[in-house]
Length: 336
Image 1 (cartoon, rainbow, N blue to C red):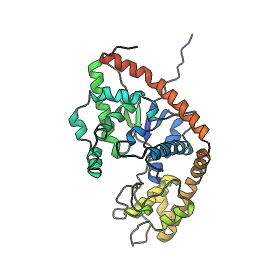
Image 2: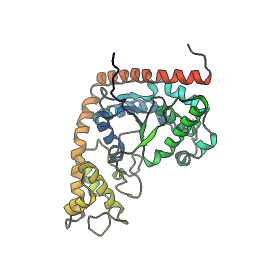
Image 3: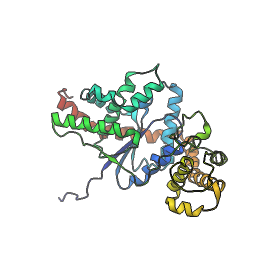
Image 4: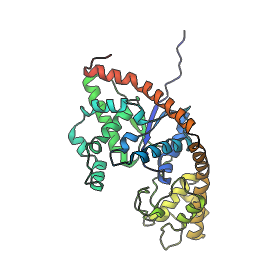
């Protein structure tokens, strides 16, 4: 019997915390790119609720946001039939593997993580051990699935390097066990900044609601926020240093339309900022409308969502069982 010569698809893993509705930054910087990867790669996407509790959470709110996040991923184009889409806490292997990996992680390496330093400064009264060991759980998320590629932004590169270091350290001691993951650099991924403070990254925790676009914002809200977007006084739509506000709007417009910056400059030559802001707002509104409609439909179908995340949990547990058994055997645990 001939064996299939079809090459194994590379595995991609990515996760998102259920800490509120996605912003336009989350969407254009990450989630928009996840859907198109499903045909080319073996995609694993997770709502990482275990990571969310490194800061204080209201339990009822966390449950609601986790389900909303799961529904939003489907609304954004993640197909549970094509991808492994699951809720992190539904697969105990993540926590089990994280403990083993923590025993092969240097304390000093965790202390150098810039995100820990930043978050501990934001929450000085709640610096828990989970916040410190968060990157080890992230390494377990990645390594448990034999992940080849991880889409990462600038703020997560250090965590991926730690995961690679842990994998290499474990492999060096026990022999080939983990795939050492590489960063996946998407062809188009925009870093979206605040509309009111364009030197800062767009964030849903921004105290000024005009600074960010929720992907569930209504069209009139989107247009109003873009009209108020901070720009300079020059009035010329062009991309260059010192024009952070306009540069950000051009990045948003480019990420959705696919036009490069030169094309955008030509399109809006002599038209001023008012016309440009309106065009960006309308483009964003048109892009997000199908997502908002799909989310509204999914939110009413709790039975379908439950079916999807239950099947996702089963698939995730099956996908990691062999790896966990292998790791347990190599470190000397007695198997059942």
